[in-house]
Image 1 (tube, rainbow over the protein chains, first blue to last red):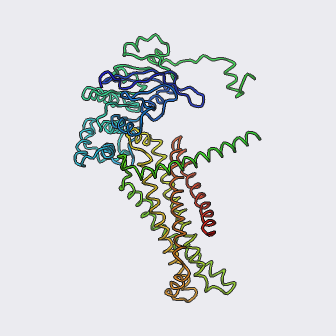
Image 2 (image 1 turned 30 degrees about the vertical axis):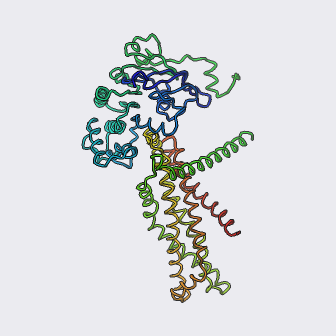
Image 3 (image 1 turned 90 degrees about the vertical axis):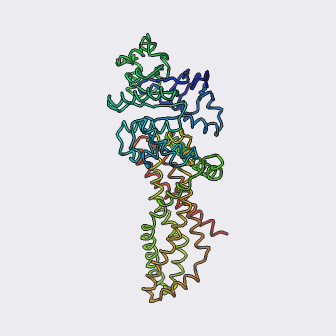
Amino acid sequence: MSGVPAIEVENLSVSYDGHSVLRNINLRVEPGEIMVIMGGSGSGKSTLLRHLLGLETPQSGTVRLLGQDIRRMTAPQWQDLRKKMGVAFQSGALFGSMNVGENVMLPLREHTKLDDATMRIMMRLKLDFVNLSGCDHLMPSQLSGGMIKRASLARALIMDPKLLFLDEPSSGLDPVVAAALDELILKLKEATGLSLVVVTHMLESAFKIADRITVLDRGEILVSGTIETVRNSPNERVQALLNRRVEHLELNPEEYLRRLTGTQGARV
Amino acid sequence: MLAAAEGVGRRVIAGFTEVGLAAALFIESLMWLATGAARRQPVRFAAVLEQSIEIGIRAVPIVFVLSFSIGTMVAIQGIHSLRIFGAESQVTFGVALSVTREFAPLITGILVAGRSGSALAARLGTMKINEEISALTVMGINPVRYLVAPALVAMLLMLPALTWFADVVALLGAGLYIAADLDLSFVAYLDQLRAVCTVDDILHGVGKSALFAVLITLVGVINGVQVSGGAEGLGRLTTRSVVHAISAIVIADMIFAYLATRG
């Protein structure tokens, strides 16, 4: 695998109904590194993540996962690639009809022919890793926010993926639990050496775990590099994001009037 | 005026898109059933069984109550209207045909649409809002194979079975009333039934219910996957799925009855 980037995005542009969501995105994630994608709401980071997960097909540009172009892959190739990818969604996306243990074992049940006892051992190992030992019989509705995120992480790890995606792992958690989760992510990197993509808007968390950070704003990459590069970026929008400054949009009086009166075109 | 026409046009196109999507889902489900095992993604028997219990077994008590009432009701109305001509002894004829060909499949279909079609829409809608469908996809588990195909098979097994059960219960209810009202023995009623009701009549109703099963499943799925905007959207599309499924059943029933009585 050495030399082949875990993820390679080239000139990815996406627009919905004429509204441009991503413009000319270029991104590389090397094997074994933690890439944090940062950006505020509406920055396009969710759309970018959906493309990286292969849930959307690129309208223009290419996305390569573990060296394979996602637009040229056949169904069996996808199937094999999916087994090497783990995803922990923002909401956790645990299946409400199954308990935590069944949730974590689901990929094993569907993709392997292991016997039940082995699957249970593997499940308990992963739950233990995320500090949820003994919780396998609980239903997702009985879990706290932090526990849901950790159970979801255990499920993402069950197939020992090469590529792990975490969508807002610490949002909605209290600072102590969020910090514990960051520690867990670092421990994971150390223990497994997998490549991680973490989408977050939490500055503190990003600076703690990232090898490199990509800052996304209004569909464009503002800066991509090490923590130092990002901190020292001269870009105003990056600094606004880092220092939590409220950005005042430049207002064109005519445009503003038009918006207020709801009239289209130049008639004001 | 133009805007209204445009609106109508948009709705028609959206309607056709939905029908197309439903057809595609149906074909994809059949494909997974046929080739899933070879592609290392079999449609699980356990999932079919679980759905069958939910759709079929749990509906038995309510199907019993409704079909018993419908059977009795048809007998009451039949005797009442035939009495005008002094032909109330012919009531078994009307009851047997109307129950097996229309009332049993229709009432069972409507009941299952309300019970299980909406539940399917709500389940898929909740899963979509909660990113569970995306989670399945990224795990390499095809959602059509995992969620739609088992529901379709269970519905195709259970709705005809429930319809047959409704036939039996409705005819029982009708028989009890007729026997009591016309001073007829129940055995004599059964004899009359055997003389007028053919296998064709039963198959007409049961066959129709298989068609209803497909309609209920697809309408439920289509509405479920279109859910957006949280709880409000979920409620709206769940209601929509019931209304659409019942409408589809009634219209399909009419077309089926027309075609089946031509030949």
